[in-house]
Amino acid sequence: MLNNSGARGGWTLMSRMDKSVSRREFFQTAVAAAGAAVLSGLPGQAEAHDLTPTDPAYRFEKYEGIVNRSVRIRQLYEWPNINNPIIYANISNGLNGFQFSYDVPPDEIQVVVQAFFSANAAMYDDHIWEKYRLGDAFNVKDPATSASATRNIWHKSKISAQDVSPPPKDRSHPYYGDTSIEGLQRRGVLFLT
Image 1 (cartoon, rainbow, N blue to C red):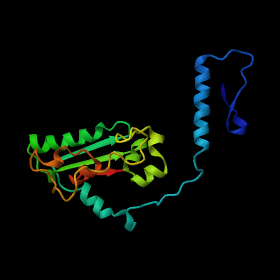
Image 2 (tube, rainbow, N blue to C red):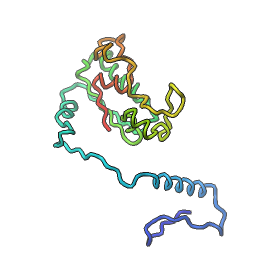
Image 3 (spheres, rainbow, N blue to C red):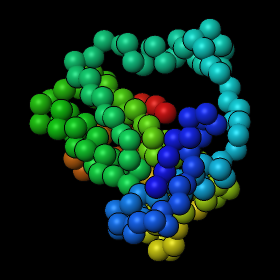
Image 4 (cartoon, rainbow, N blue to C red):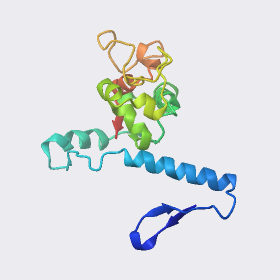
């Protein structure tokens, strides 16, 4: 059983020799121990560039120009779970529905995807996926190899940028069904992390 040891400010595992341990208590203890083991393997301090709107690397005017432009339709997708990739089809469906069913011009549709928690990993390039073994960390399989992904399987479009020019004018356009991050970005979708 876990016990908060107040004076020492930490958690300790108490001996249960005097009583039998229920299955629930065993699993709770095992999960807590596994969590502590994972957390102990994480680096103690991480460094990141603290961007502020006044920092030139932030490109605040470009961001504001994208999200604050005058449009008829705004869609915001919150995406916390990398193992729920249906979001790409949902975004494409939203774009196509407004454009082709309701005749909203593509430049009057703004879609923003806010990735967080494990979905942040979908915003990283292949180098990061390979170096940090994100396929193993997030249980993502590469459909080409059936092994843990060592590349970002959602980013790269199968359509070369030289082959077509966005946005699609009709449903026969190759970008119409392109649900990759790169393909959706070509259609103006803004992915944030």
